[in-house]
Image (tube, rainbow, N blue to C red; front, side, top):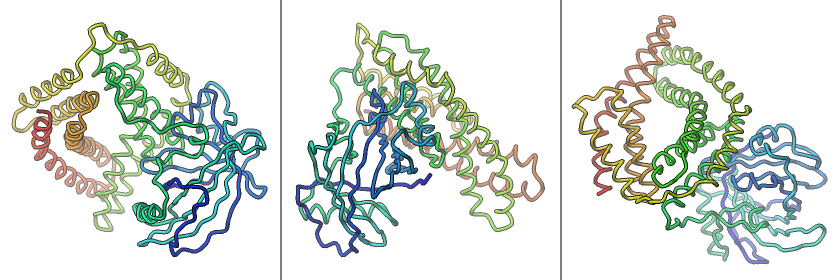
Length: 461
């Protein structure tokens, strides 16, 4: 199976649009047919995932595109029309829990363009004339310009997009072609007026994100997929907790199941963070100590391997699949509380609790106290997210990051002490140097968290 990271920009154009002279090398014109697949309940589409079988010059390949930060992961594997290759189906296990995929759209594309270089970056710039097929009949069509990065800095794609806009194209909304064929609009950024519907909409979005990043988490090539899935789980739980007064239903059972799933994901994610942190510090050591540090961290690698195996067993297990169904059904069944709720009042209440907790700390709080304060700050963040105050959310996130870096350092020191106790002399020396680096980072976090708190409180007043 081939795996690639896809960075691209999409622009809309009128029929007959031709690229301006971009100074690139012409690409060979292509004609291909793409049949898109989804489940009956459109689980893939709702999660921003595309699955298609592309046929070109007698060659048939299946392509799966998964969301990943500001890019997408593109997986490709040869296969016939009967069904997706087993490896791709395995990654879509959670989406296929209620049934197989079936064709939902067929597109025929004529593509021409050029290979363009801009400031050290290379991109394929193509004009796609897309026909939406209904059996052998062309039902509709559109023209799209794609700028796909081959190498270099993804930001250079914006430079090329500006040149194409000047030639008459229009910046698109980034929707996959199948979304356009099915008439699925981009997600609206407008917020409902009703506080209860704001809550339900935000939590429903987290469920979509869990399902969106589930395949990437199973694949395991991009740590950010796991991170984003865990964030969605934790945010779901935090939003439900923050908005309890808005709903009649008792969702504590659902919160407990989300806590379980967050723990399963966290066992791997915490080791990812720890390894990345310590490897970064180890790279700054001299050659002998760097080599010793590398040997020291092998045990953490082994721990992560075991934790990932356990996570995959959980994701394949009945408890997780039941949670997904329960999550969906309980969101549908939620009903607003009789007395409603004031989002501003909920947010200010959480802010007051944070202020009181911080005021009760002495000049040098214990590590455990700062960790507890971080959790308070997280509740403030999600409470203001419900209220739609982006400025306060940004300030709360900054406080959370500072205190999170402090807690990561505490965890790193504990891990280093454990590793050093079981290591040889050279590894123990390296562990000591890494430990000193962690203490410096912890000292920096302790020196800056109060400033971050003050900026948060000023933004909320």
